[in-house]
Amino acid sequence: MTSARATETGVLSQGRAAVFEEPIGPSGVPGAVAVEIRAASINHLDLFLAHGAQRVTPPRVIAADGAGVVRASADPAWRPGDEVVIYPVVCDWECEWCQKGENVRCPRFGVVGEHSDGTACELFHIDARNLFRKPKSLSWTEAGAFPLTFLTAWRMLTTRARLRAGETVLVVGASAGVAVAAIRIAKHLGARVFATSRSEAKRTRAVEIGADDAFDSTDFSKAVRAATGDGVDVVFEHVGAATISESMRSVVQGGRIVTCGSTSGVKAEIAMPRLFWGQLDLLGSTMGNVGEFKAVLEAIDGGLRPVVDSVYPLADVEAALTRLDAAEQFGKVVLSVP
Ligand SMILES: [Zn+2]
Image 1 (cartoon, rainbow, N blue to C red):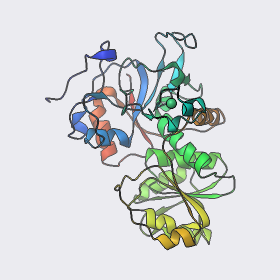
Image 2 (cartoon, protein in one colour):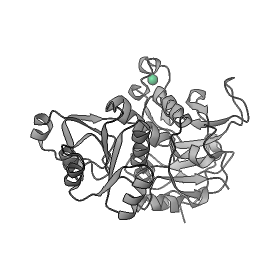
Image 3 (cartoon, protein in one colour):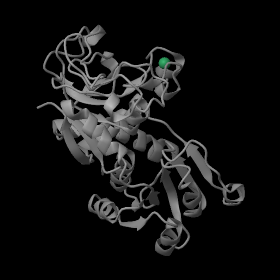
Image 4 (cartoon, rainbow, N blue to C red):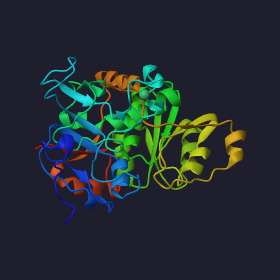
C-alpha cells in the first residue's frame, strides 16, 4: 500500500499512529500497533476526513476520542500514571467565550483529530485543561468510546432541547454512535424513548440498550403517532436530508427537533408550514462545552454507560473505518492497544 507508513514527524516522532494520508476512503488511513493512549474511537468525522470531504490536508492523525495514562506533564495538575479521558474539543481556553465556559463559540473551536492531530496514536499531546480523570467504573475500551458522542448528545438533549423527565424522545437512525448515546442519556434523564432503524437487528439492539420501542425507518411518523397519539416532545436528529420531513411529522405541536448532523446530505427540504404552524423549535447543536463534558462524567458516575460495538487493534484501523463506512455498527467502534 503506497500510503501505508507510520508518521515520524512532529510530536508523534516517538511512536506510530493511524494517519490520514490520501483522500481515498478507509484505505487512505493506514494503521500500525503501538499506542500511548489505551483506547481511541472513531467517528463519522473520520470517514468524512478519509474521503477527503473535510478540507484537511494530510497527513493528519485521526480520531477525537481517547483515554490513556499520563506519561509526563508540564502542568502540576497531572502526574505520570494518572488515568485520564480527553475532552475532544480544540479551543484556545483564553478568549471571552472560553472564559465564560462557552467553548463551542471559541473563534478557534474545532474537533480533536480534525483541527489538530487526533488520538489514534501512541503519544498524544494536548492542553492539560482538556484532561479529566477516567471514570473508575469504565473499562479502557468504554473510556475511549464515550467522549465525543456523549458530549454531543448530552448538549443536544439537555442544553438545547431542555429535555425533562417524563417527556418522550424519538432517536432517528438508532445505530450511529451519537444516537446510541442519545438513547442511553435520554433514559438516564427519565424520558420515554423511541428509536428508528432500517435494520430489524438494530431495532432489537436499540430496545436491549434501553429504548422503549423501535420502529422501521420507512414512514416512521405513523408508528410514532400510533405509539404516542400526538407525537413525541423531542426528536433527536443526525441523519438530516433523508429523515427531517418524517421527524417534523413525528413531533407534538410546540415540540423540539434538535440536530447535530446531516449524514444523508448537506441540503434538506422542509415543509415550512409544519415548522411555523406547528410552533416547532428546530435546534442546531455541535459538540459541547467543558461544563457539559463534566456533566457527562457525573452522569457516568451515576450509572450512565456507553455502548461498544467492536474493538479493533490500531493496526486494523482500515477495517474499523470500513465497518463504519458500511454502517454495520451499533454503538462505538474502538481502536485498542493490545
Ligand atoms: Zn476560546
